[in-house]
Length: 277
Ligand SMILES: [Zn+2]
Image (cartoon, rainbow, N blue to C red; front, side, top):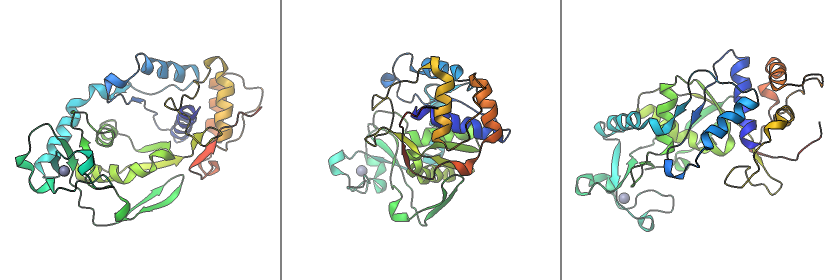
């Protein structure tokens, strides 16, 4: 239900602004992906009438694009090698050993970190949450962009993909809010324009834990697609489509017409208590 709410919000926002709605499968770490997970996601979206534009992008096919972004950063001396073990890092995850000034002496089996000399606060006008400011001390420094085992970081991959897909607006759960400054930093370093972000509440269970596969939240039942959509609209503070509308596409058509960003609760999380509609 947590993923469905985010999908519904971004779908309705794109459609009500006559935009395209794109789907990307973020399978950066193929060995850890559950077999068939991507197919299940796409079939769940279809069952709920959430039909996307264009082709689906798989991050597991995009390594060359990430490599070339990385080369661009290396050429501009914005990356350094860090062979420090976790124990040797500062509490905030930054490199404590001045690896940035002795990069040539390290072997290849090391993590690559972003050499961001952040000088100023980052201010973002979130189109749902409102203005948000990160002070320099709260912006992650030296964060990893390619891990020791060669996997690219989520932060680098999404910035590269957003640009190549021509993304302008992103709606996502507020658990990703604090990724925004890092993504802005990478985008600036790659000479890409900043995107517009809207963060919606993360949907949690009664105990306040995010509803996700990791928390073993149940999958939505595709046989109850219409009801699931109504639940999602309720959580998003939207008007309920009239009861006579029965199919997912009827419900979504009505919800596009009445979509109201301002009605989305301005909270970082919301408990999902199944409600009778
Ligand atoms: Zn280091």
